[in-house]
Length: 400
Image (cartoon, rainbow, N blue to C red; front, side, top):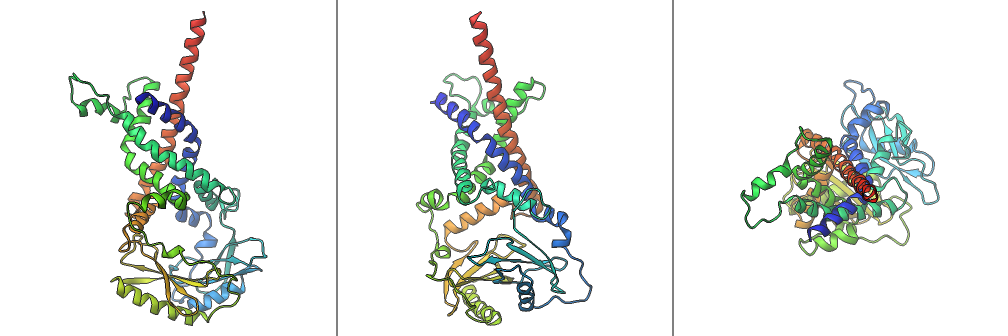
């Protein structure tokens, strides 16, 4: 049994190594994506503000954004969460016949001046898009379509299984007449013998890092399955354990997308706020502030998000409802917590993966864990390489 698991860990680990090194290094970077993006692109994201000058209304700002948007794109959202000193960022939607040349627009909230547009993650070699490209590498190898998602999802599934196998392999073997207790025999697995040979240090790093971070690595692995194989693997398994509310994705697409706005934006905003007030009363939520109101023309819905007492993140609202674009009837909801147990578990899993909880210390820890994941993968390859060289040397010696 143990021999079979050793072979699994060895060959599955080798197959995953390159992917996990890439995921670890890119994950360490994108944990601080917004901070690095601010530093790389200050003229785009952090324009100079005039003291004592109020920002434009969200309706006027959307109009300014639409007037300056690239041809063939529409601005179908109101943005409420712009902080002083920051640009307002709007998502651009391209018309079906138009090639997607830009999907983000940045505008000065006080003056309405266009600061720039970009296609998120378009190139590794452009200052404006490098962080987005690294993000795309992290979750889909920057491949088009669903190919990269499926590859990383399969890797994450094997990684999840290997987390359990790797942990089991660190346990001391059962000894009927052992002179020491279980914990004392397991203790060396948690330590690195820095005075030993390079080969032994490499092995100890591989084993000890995996043990010390086994819980968070399992969280990263299973959450990666959730992100990439949600319908194929994650939901079929987790729905047997926990109840889920799937209303957020249950509304089908219309036969024909909406061509015209169902109503003026101020009216749509009032309608969404009324629906959210009823929703908040039902779930006993305290609303701290608004986040976004976005029109989904494909499904004929408005998505209205706020920051509430149910949110996990402090910096962004993720409590949301879907309302019918004509009647305001609630068609779906998204509650970070206080909803179905499966949704709460999944939201916690995603927030832990992306470093969105527990402030800066946890973000630093997530970034550090990404680097350690790369180290674990590299040391595993080095262990295999050393054994292969040793076997080759023994074979050569036996021939002589």
